[in-house]
Image 1 (tube, rainbow, N blue to C red):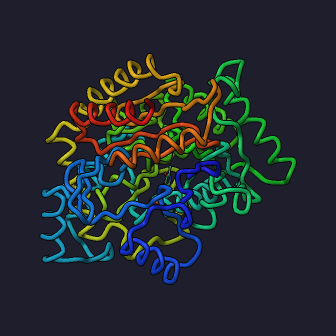
Image 2 (cartoon, rainbow, N blue to C red):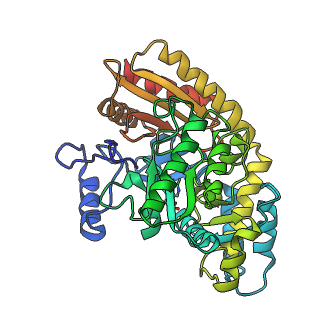
Length: 434
Ligand code: PMP
């Protein structure tokens, strides 16, 4: 997603396309227009998925180390069955009485601290963040938003303007105030203290521009900022800082949510903080478009009194059935625990490999969300990261790069990832680096 990332640098002149792929690329360009991007220098054509594997037209298996949507495994039979069964029974919206949405809402809220006791449904993470912004504006009377320097929060006008990683043609919007990502290099006085101070300073700049603060939004694992897993706890002082300025704290859990970080269901829990609102999406429906926003009741009171909310597809009966099945799979297959144990083994394996390859710089991870900085001549290198990502692609192993400069490998496999898959990844990485 980042501006500097080169892994999307598909170039027709250098790509190795067979005639069928050549034809698909032409049809894409003709039908979808110029704004879409393909992953990899030579794109991948996939036709089927199962568990942590994807299959191409020749039936070759590709190891998926990147998919955060099919999080409980591609085409999980229990999820597919729940979807088909509900779609064959009733596909209604939220304007009729139905148990499905309530059963799911109550179950989902059970995973949150008791303060967050309402949940509203959307179809995408962008919509959830957009709704949160409308609610924050109503609750605070302000309109200013603080984001991190390479944030990504969505595709609507408001959320695209909060998404620094899309680039300067779009972000920051006039009411959006970016601050440096919470890493030690940006805050030598200490990340917790420095990041909180940056929030207060951004609010001061806002007020000078005649804008009052509405909210701080952060992806609690800072995925597009290069994956920032610690120090655990620093988001608590960030939440204090924005609340002290009259704004709300929105935790964007679209990336880390639903158990990926291993020890906790949500990324914000790693920081011991209770947000005012929490947005969710991507893995929530394992591929079916379902997303949500959880919040404290006092935060939505004003908005609820003045505006009505209806989202045609958000929280429909099929969405609720699918999302419920996803939760059941996470619970029954112990996927959070697996994310923790397999993630720890993965990180240890990367450490071992780094002892032999100077290309591998700093490594970090939380559960099955991992990143490795890629170096060339001792310096972070986006070009080298792109070479590694494309090299792994040639080994039929799928990942991408992240960070403001695109110089970190981003590794984010489906949660049923097992030690043998870690072994296969490390073997492929060893080959690419050798
Ligand atoms: N927030 C974050 C942190 C995301 O990574 C994304 C999607 N990449 C979104 C929001 C937007 O979600 P969606 O694409 O479902 O609109």
